[in-house]
Amino acid sequence: MRVVIQRSKQASVAVEGQITGAIESGYVLLVGLTHDDTLEDVKYVAKKVAELRLWEDHDGKMNHSIVENGGAILSVSQFTLYADTRKGRRPSFIDAARPETALPLWEAFNEELKNTHNLKVETGVFGAMMDVSLVNDGPVTIIVESRPKE
Image (cartoon, rainbow, N blue to C red; front, top):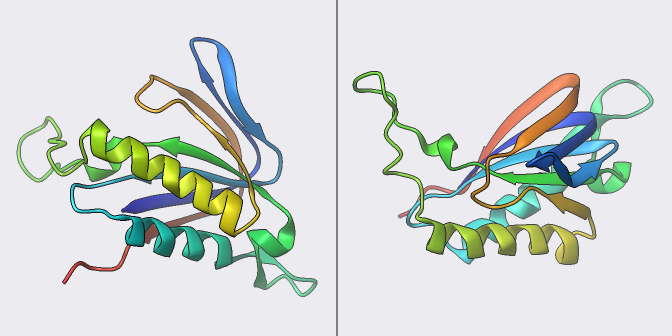
């Protein structure tokens, strides 16, 4: 599992001109899943996202998590995070999980953020062509991956 976190001042996602999710201060999460990801990976990455200290304290140091800061999440499924560009000019997406695997895990990830970490979560639409708009804060962009499989 691979998640790109972009700290944002505001963000929204639209499908066919209709906004499906919008947040003020928080994170835009681009969420990619691969074939062997499990609920354990989902829980690990959700906990990491919720607890990472990416918000400044009164001294300007990144010492607060999104939970402490009171921010929200905009979660967007993004199979292209598993693009393989090592050969040729057209990316291969064979490492990305098939929709029947990825969709339930993406939904579980969003529920984990909501229910376990008490975060407001807005989403895009799985598998749709989406227009994502954001005002990147910082910019702060971090990549989180699940633990290596043994």
